[in-house]
Image (tube, rainbow, N blue to C red):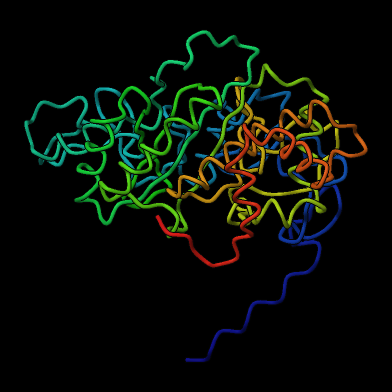
Length: 374
């Protein structure tokens, strides 16, 4: 039997071209949503699927419009509880509708509910009882309770890992038993066998008083943080405290190339995937490029500083918290031309050494070793 003749090569007219730039679609960089060239595109980027969406057709990345487009393209969906993207192999509780990214599912055969909703009585349903779902917002009460919305309140999220999944419940229970009034323990999908410790809105003095005991309890229970690449420490600052100009100076300071060597040394990492450092202008306080920046502006009530590596070294924890507080206070006072001057910042810190002693001690030590341990 004679071999079939090869198909003739496709001509340029037979290949699908972009109607905007006349390039091959595979090579084209024009926006697939508005069909404009990159320099003219005004679309936003979906935080969950990294696709683009038109703000005039969709108010936010979690809108029905964006979710529909993502699902059409990749057969994946957005969990309404935590906002994570879940694939076709994920499943949800038939009662509450939460996907398995947010809720642990019952291990009993033929049960299609999460452990929060089912009543099978399986032992697995009692695991991790001290750890709440990632969408839980039942934070500890503000401390002191007399804080006003315009005070510079601070909240901290510290991610920790355990030796393996069998240890998670034991570690969480030990922490919760001693610190339930100070911490909310939450699931975190970015961790392997761990969870995050989340404080309420506290003053700097309250954080300085409570973290030594929290760190001690966590280490004794078996929790670890520094030696895991999956963990981070995030500091939230009250958004209402900032003026647009103060926030602009704060952004410039943390993201400046001039301050970057000191910022990275203090943070303990450079993490472009989850806490990108990129040059900012004073006017950048008015918009955000997404939550995975060094300073996340997407939260309505807080400014989130995401640069820090997770640690249970109490001196480093407090140095990170004091840095955020000091940087905000200094940014409110410093001139615009000096807002990327590290030495000017440290002059302010040293002038207020009673408040920032951990930050001063940490920077003076000039830690250069690879690890500091938990």
